[in-house]
Image (cartoon, rainbow, N blue to C red; front, side, top):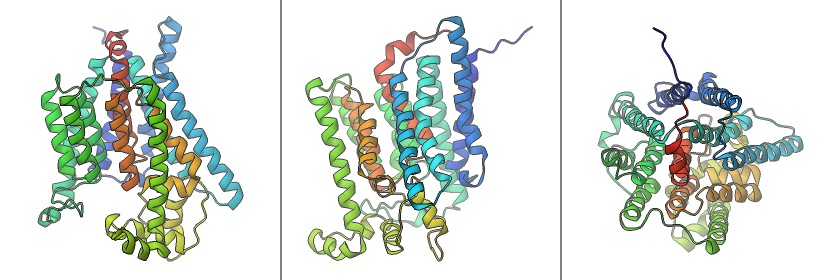
Length: 392
C-alpha cells in the first residue's frame, strides 16, 4: 500500500511546526533570542508553500488571492530596510536585528497569502483550533510551572495592569485567536468562549477592552456591514494621523524635561502609566541615542556601556518605529495595516486594537499572532473563495 500525502497537508504541518516552536517561546521553555533555529521554523511554511504554488503553476491551477496584500507586507519590509540602510550609512553603525525585525513583519503577510491560496476554510479552522489548544497549554506552563506560582499573591488592578494570572507572552496570540472565533462564533461557540477567557486571563488592558467591544459589536451589529466607500479612506487616513499624533505626544510626555509638565498639567505619572517602560525612552535620550535603523534602540540598550537594560527592548513599538525610522515610515506603517481592514467595521476595530497595543506595549515581532489576525481579515473578505478551494 502506498501512502499518499497531499501537498496541502505538508503546508499545514509546516504551519503547525512554526506554531509549536512559538509555543515553546510563549511557555518560556526556550528563549527565541538565543537560538538561530527560530528562522528555520519561521521560514519553513514559506518554502513549503511556494513549492506547492510552483506545482499549481505547472498544473495551471494557480490562484493569486491576497497578492496585493502580500505586496503591502513586502513593501513595508523594503521601506523599513531602505530607511535603515540610509541611517546605517549616516551613522556608521549596524545591527543584524534590523533584518530580523523587518523579516518578522513581512512573514505574516506571506503566511496568509499561502494559506488562502492553498488551504480550505476547514483547513484554516483546524490550524486555528490547534492554535487555541496550544496557546492554553503554553499559558498554563508559563504561568503555573515556570514561574513557580510566585505571582498568585498579586492583587487585581486594572489601573496598574496587575493580576495573579497576568501573562505577556501569550496575550497577543490569545487576542488574535479570540478575534477569529468572535467573528465565527456561530460555528465555534465553545472555541469563542475559551479564546475570550484566555484573553481576559492574560489581563492586558487593551486586549481586554477590545475583546468586549468585538463581542458587543458582533452580537448587536451585522458583521458583514461595510464601511461606506465615501468615508472609508478618509476614516483610515484620519485614524492613521491620530495614531501618529498620539505616538508623538506620548513620546513628548516621556522626555525627561517634560515629566514635571506632564504631571502638573495632565495629572499623569507617565512612568507609572507606561508600566515604567518610559525609563527606557529616558535612558536613550539621556545617553545621546542616535538611530541607526530598525532595532537600533534594542541594540543600544543592550550594548551601551553601563546600560541597566541589557535584557530589555523598548517595547513601546509605535514610539520605537518613530524614533528609529521617523514619522513618515510610521504613518505609512499604520495606514498600510488599516488598509487591510478593507470595508469591514469589524476589521477596522481589530486593527485599531492591535495598533493601540503597539502604542502602549509591544507585539511588533509576534509574527504568528499577526498571521492569525491577518488571516481573520482575509477570511472575512475571501470566505467564499477559500471555502470553494479544494484542489488537493
